[in-house]
Amino acid sequence: MSNDYGKLLSIPYTKGFVITGLVGRLPMSMLGISGILLVTSTVGSYTLAGMLSGSLLLAQSLTAAQRGRLVDRWGQRRVLLPIVLAHTGALTAILLCCLLHGPELLLLAFGFVAGTTFPSIGALVRSRWTDILSGPQAPPGAPALSVALSLESAIDELVYILGPLLATLLATSITGAAGFVGAMACTLIGGVLFATRKGGGDPHPRPAADSGSVLRIGGIRVVAAVCVALGTILGAVEATIVAYTKEHGHTGLSGPIVAAFSVGSLIAGLGYGSRTWRGNAANRFVLAIACVLVGMVPVMLAPNIGLLTAGVVVAGIALAPALIGAHELIQELVPAEKITEGYSWVQTTVGLGLGIGVSAAGTVTDRYGAHTSFLIAGAAAVLAVLMSLPFRRVLARAATPVQYRGTHRRAAWVPRHAIRGGQVR
Image (cartoon, rainbow, N blue to C red; front, side, top):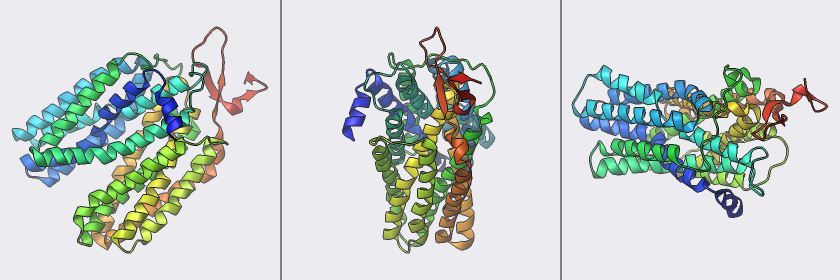
């Protein structure tokens, strides 16, 4: 495993954008909890805290793909720097609103602006890896792109383990606003360093000939729908864990159990990237979705805290290959000039599913108890299988590179079924 990832990070300039990308991504998991701690410690309203987090998450999910499209057209540096500065400004306004007890509507408005300008650095890092490892310009002996996508999936899980711990530590050891300030600092420092780092970085802008959304591609619609279901599983499981531990009198264990969920995904993500896979990505994706369903069974049947912890580790191990497979399919199905938008749709749809999962789990928990709300995640896993299995052939229509004369840039991409005898139909 270390050999594959060692080769990957030995490529010149890659360590720099991986490290700055990690710092810039920490607010993904810090903003939610640090925002709640900020509002409750200054205003004292859990309702307002939930509304602020909801407005930020909703705006972030609705605009992620549009920000990705801007990056594809104008380049990462030109788009990311203004977005980072605008996002930091909106977070500063939220902080001042809370400290000065400003109007609630103004606070929610700034939350929406902060979500709209949230820098989707995860998609930008994956876009850089795709540009480095795909096509004839890939370094000799470089690992496959799946290794890089697995590494990024593992880093995402690391972010979701470290972020809440850092935000809580700052808020409890210094002041209620310290976690929020820490998230702002990570956004500003990580985002600016990522955007301005020279070498191995900003892929050349590739304006698309067709300005339409990548959702016009049938396979992408399938991936997006499945990612909504995967996000629902994540949201429902994490929300139900909190309620389940409270019901059993072990509220303090909710954090470690959620962390165990992420640790399972981290290990599986690194393991997935350490192997050389044969066959097409569509079959692996569908198989991974089926494993997610199997992995949810011990979670739904767990009779106590101990077995629940073991169950969520198994479920996390099953989820990681599915999310990596979604990014692999994006890379195969989306034209090179729209790759950032394609990766951004994964974030958008998973974020949408998170909101659905948390809301549904909360409603079911209030009516029927925490253990029953695990069925929300199980139902989402069944739905993911039903959406992916019948469309396996649609997903398998991966892209085949076509080299045009007179250019050494990355080849244009067309669907494989449009090629007959080496000629584009």
